[in-house]
Length: 509
Ligand code: BES
Ligand code: MN
Ligand code: ZN
Image (spheres, protein in one colour):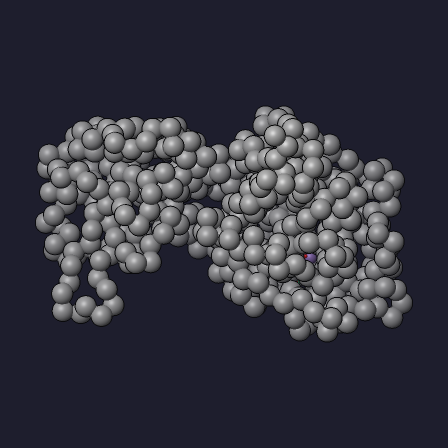
């Protein structure tokens, strides 16, 4: 998809489809007066073309609601699509992101290959922020998972044009729009990895994809395997991969901006289980095919560091992705086995299906050894997180309120939903082992929390955030603005969290 920004009058736009956003102006109380939805443009010709239908009351302006007009009067565009943003008081940049995704996903199945969107002109949102959100939403909306279908149903859009008022500041807008493209493409890069089946994307292939990406965006990258795991004494990580014919991959990416010699080093650690059968504690057959997405945390880190490399914030970042395949086999680890992690802690294996925390234990330890001063991990770690939060919010945990506050602020930019859950000694007690230091499961209750406490043992007192994205990394039902399949959750929030660390302390100039 080509993305373009044009500074021109809307009504002159020669396009297959011109989309304009509209906000619902009805306040909850004003039941008598029913104002029509407000079209977010200054263009009088476009407003006139839409007046009749907006005043008819047929279109309410609800989030992602659509209404199509053919041959709109006075416009060069062949079609005018009005897309709802939701209630005026509640709509945000994220509403623009989603509404833009809706525009693209409206066009694709109708064979419309080229669309233009009027950048929302709206006092609640500056045009530049809207432009970034629109670029992101268009790219996210353009993604479809049917890459292995012989005749792809919904091939990519050829062109997305954002039409901006001529009076807008060119430089600011171009930078914002370009940023949105980088972010959207990085999120889609993560989604494309998550979408790959386990037979295509083995740990080795995931390592190759990471290395190719690193080459393209100018990151240092190393991909290690079995030998290095043994050398580093990564007994927890290795125990997961030992039952698979596929060797593990330990992917390390480094972003070192010029001139930044001190300040924080942010460590991004991702779970990269390319397929999770459960191992000897094997999973039931129902839905097991979905366990190809068990590397979504690792993919999120790759997507985030890709965006970081292109946006160049002045803060050092290291990403560590622990990739393995969890298989049952004559060589596989068994319940009751005891493993020694890189940190020296001994782990009693209760359930071989609690493998994510094992690879992350060594990943967190290694990121610290490489110099990380702050840690964030992302993992499709527990089914229990979906029991707690459904498929709406992802789970977040942290041992440090200041670090978490920065993450929470980043959510207002990313539009992603995370909900913080507690840690605590009582939970840590639940994973004490009778034979060794800790065990890898803590029973049925508070499963997402005991899993987080397991990771806490390896993060220790380094400021750390754990993201459990098991319930949100895969979308089961398509939405107007995003396809079903991999969501790319956490890429945008991690990126913004990283950017929150650029301050005077890390600037060496
Ligand atoms: N990869 C799974 C978690 C998962 C479940 C991700 C559903 C996505 C959707 C993880 O490795 C796992 O199997 N966790 C177990 C832990 C249990 C054995 C303590 C779980 O959640 O059942
Ligand atoms: Mn598992
Ligand atoms: Zn897993």
